[in-house]
Length: 289
Image 1: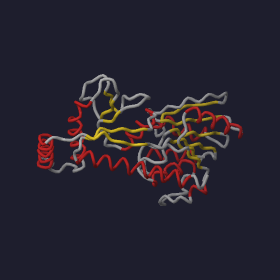
Image 2: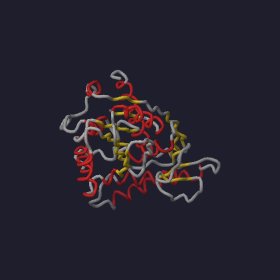
Image 3: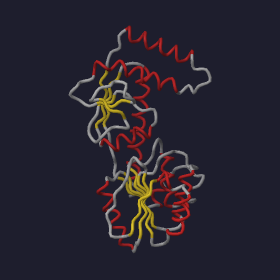
Image 4: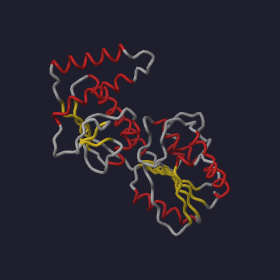
């Protein structure tokens, strides 16, 4: 079964109910970012997801997993590469038992095709080479608890001096690009645009930024954030880092300080597009539950 959007208490309840199926041992796989404590009188082992490719786990688990074993994959959607070695090892484990629970806060990292990775956890090989189709949700045991977000911007008006500095920075990045990845240009420009927002930082509020360049006690990085509300100064360049931030912070009302420069408009469009994909998935998934 696949369960989307559950908190840890709801995950525990789901496991409690499932254990009535005659389970005698449990393996919980988790990434470092999202451990999951499970309370039970059954034999249980927690294994870091990154470790399941190691020989000391791989062959032992293949021997120990049987028809009375429950595998729990907790927030293990960590890459969009369906051929990832760690995913392949997970498929070997899942082939040993029919008892698999997949917990994931979001149904995908970037788009619907990522959901196939979750399907592959519970039905290895069944969807090999296939693109996502909503009909798959009718064929599998999938339940989603929607996570909906609001998004607003605090719009700054750049000065002529700001615009000139921005254009100068952009020209410099293009002139010195050489053989480097051109995608690095908007990433660096976004950081540059974020520096114009320093004067907008209120000491009584909490902010989040891509790095710790602001050196302020109320500005955290995405890796150091805790539960609570933050105002966004700049976005991480990897979607999964922002997804992890949403999971950890628990925020649903997203507020971003917009410099008014073109690069911020790009990131705003990227995020609103992702929210739209998420809402579309939840709306269509509800038809199959």
